[in-house]
Image 1 (cartoon, rainbow, N blue to C red):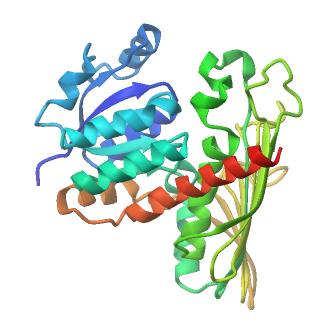
Image 2 (image 1 turned 90 degrees about the vertical axis):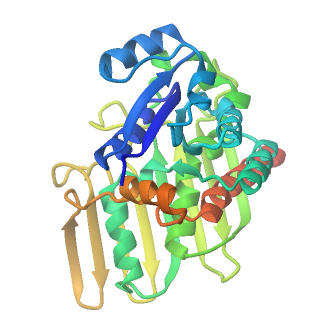
Image 3 (image 1 turned 120 degrees about the vertical axis):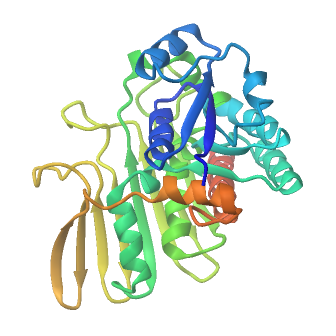
Length: 336
């Protein structure tokens, strides 16, 4: 099988490095990149001297040798990039959030159905975290019985002086439940094996950044599947400066026979490193170091492109996670 060829359009978020890494580690080749911003292009070219800079995005869209367009553009611009790529016969791998409005989501869904292309979103807090991958294997194997509830916590470090202007513009980043909350909605659907959920309550706020009124620095959601499995999601920009990583991401899964806790990036005042999984079941308690667990997303996505399958992530779940995030964001803002 020939190597998959991809190109990058839009490099506004550092998640682009994870997207490129996932594909390259699985054997894909990046044939070029386009960035509208000269300063970003210069830094990117220095980091990836083997990837040619292309002045016009149309050259990448129109190149028949390119299989996939990868993008971490400004969130509000990602839907248009995806639509253009699909209409040029390309599959697409976006950073989260893939869309910042329900109208964008509807447009992307229609074009995806019309073209039959793959539209995937690399929800990095799942697909780039070995502990989350291991938790999925354990839940699928019945290690904790049937899932009853899931709690996902996604605190992030703000780094306000270093953020670009669009980061503080609600229409461009989508709101906190859409932006960083999208990770949690995808994980909720994944671990509960649900196809949909109802938003029971949602709230957003700006508690400590009055100088940036467009920023939402905290948000939470309570949701429930049609089968009665419940979830709670909390995201914020309040990671303390003393924490050695960008956020103390946690995931708690309660099942009928046991529980799983993930300490994804740091074990506060505990073990070194990240990717800690704690399993408690009928036999006792154990800590599992997940740092060496394989991340299969890249090779699965490449196989999906060539074989037209959905092994990396079902297309329906990719869209449903964004739909839930967008609906929760709307609910929270209407209730404010």
